[in-house]
Image 1: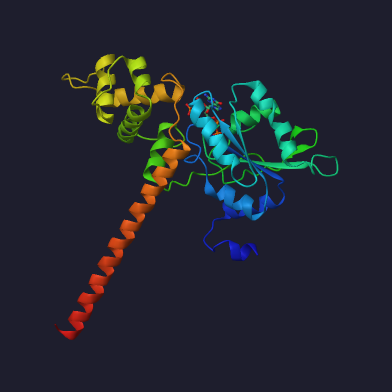
Image 2: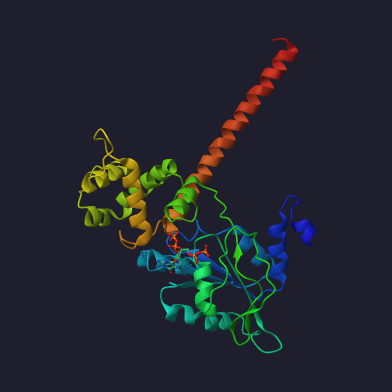
Length: 315
Ligand code: G4P
């Protein structure tokens, strides 16, 4: 069965995660509440649906996210089969403390001495898995880091009396389907970026802030936002903060860095990079772009075929 389901090229780590799913009663997927869909890896859902396991989607870092967007995301996920969404922050011990009880309610047939409730925690880098684990287990566990999809350790980790982690957190790389997902992941620091890309990411963030949270830009840096674009936001940050390079030009690199830093630390305010509505619009645009690409490719292929035919006929 699994041989048919997995294409031959699927790598060993993914295969291992799929096998692990068999011995799992509940999957916890840790997402960044500011960009839940961009920070999810569709593989987790694929695997758990295949094994029909319930899912607890933790929308972590709500202290940094827009509460209105977070409420919309909770409703969005809970409309899905077998999914419960739990917005929280690891900064609040009371939020963390509720997790075992929520898990137990999602798998009521497990969690007894003969049948412990087996949980798998998954998520892309930087969503807060290690922090969450440390808080749940009340001890330090190894940083998830760059290990394969599922870290191999044989020790048993108990979240509650009869609630056990089938493995230490599984780390998955994000599947970046759309360019805007890559930019959101970089803005939130889930993926690294060099100085050059940092300016592009800051420009993206600047545009998003102009569209959805212009008042927060004004509150933080004191400039008016009318008529600005993303680059102008960076320029205004540089102007306000006096960031200049030798010769007097604005230091875009430094201003971009500061804007991103202010976003990541929450100094700019509680900002979500996507909502269910913006996600739907981005997906529709992406689908239209893909369809257009396919149409052009088809046209090109038809033209090439026609030329080849003409060549054969000598017309
Ligand atoms: P990971 O295992 O999934 O890779 O994530 P990890 O626990 O290492 O957490 C990544 C960063 O997110 C850490 O900050 C951590 O302190 C922060 N974090 C985790 N949970 C929360 C939360 O609920 N709220 C806030 N505000 N931060 C949280 P860091 O080491 O400073 O990294 P970075 O943010 O500078 O990238």
